[in-house]
Image 1 (cartoon, one colour):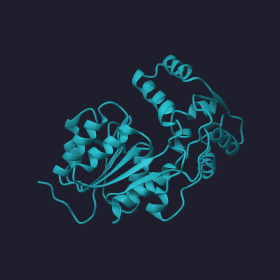
Image 2 (cartoon, rainbow, N blue to C red; image 1 turned 45 degrees about the vertical axis):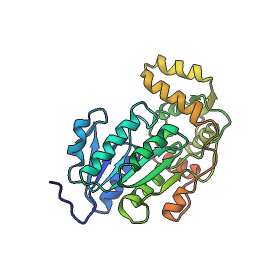
Image 3 (cartoon, helix red, strand yellow; image 1 turned 180 degrees about the horizontal axis):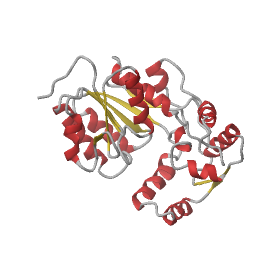
Image 4 (cartoon, rainbow, N blue to C red; image 1 turned 30 degrees about the vertical axis):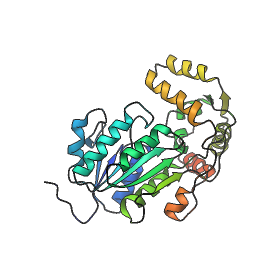
Length: 279
């Protein structure tokens, strides 16, 4: 039998990732009980092993859901539908989903979540700024050359700390049920402009080189990146980054009552940690 206290007890999926780690830290700083579900540590949780789901949900009242590898991946809709229904059956009432902006597959996952009958909040995020400092783009930045198939279409990069702040509000405060928050930065810039901003903040030279998507995929294959990951990345660069997400959203301001952080603020903060230093 599931027993709940008056204080929210939150399961954070992907609790060691970019957003989940920050959400867990914020909950802990408020002295709120947190359970981290991940394949790498904490409570065992694996999207590909439904047997791990119910033990992770036992005793929880809320959950932050970050799906791996991406909501656009095959099987995501079915997984989100099954997990969210199980969560409700286990007594979880509040579900907050990290979603993708401009992805039809992600919107199907959002519907699966809301159909569960839980109190839901959707965080529909643009491309993460932290992909340049905590993701696969860090290594090419350190090497001084970034090869990507992104051209002149800008993207309103979002600071992951803004996502975590909105997630915290949605998990712990009233007034966010049923909301879909479009989380972006305050302005759109190209990938070339983003790299130039990073280079200036880091005080070093980093070149951006646009390459055909076929060459990009071939380069990933040569590095033995799994085929499904290559397919996902090429989909994101050729479909999601086609201009549909140029306009900034107002989700951060709606949820928090403040403006989102600009990419220059993110770059300055990341540079101050020394993450982009060489040698």
